Image 1 (spheres, one colour):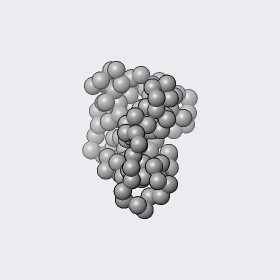
Image 2 (cartoon, rainbow, N blue to C red):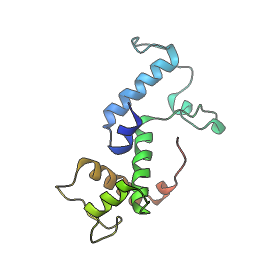
Image 3 (spheres, rainbow, N blue to C red):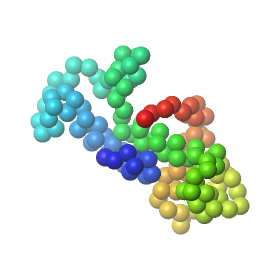
Image 4 (cartoon, one colour):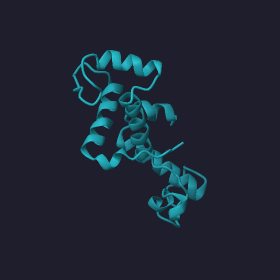
Length: 133
């Protein structure tokens, strides 16, 4: 799945899990057609940073959340980019990005960005940003 799709829209959880499943199969047997394989190490451990004994592979769901949060952060700090100016002019005319409420007529991408913002507001510990690319 292209990174662009993951960075602009929330990918369904079932799709993320299916992509992770395909990556696991390919990692362990080099083929996605076989249904059974022997995993010598748990996928959760493989997806850990190298310093923690993992291989630094990324789970699709985590990658999707991180990329959407990066997008939301660009809007929050009003980064000097044309798309940021456009979205802020359209959706945040009279209030800040942190205060704007979702509306029924908002685009799917905007709702995904607001959902990412909501996750950050619910759990401030999630505001730690790591370089993922």
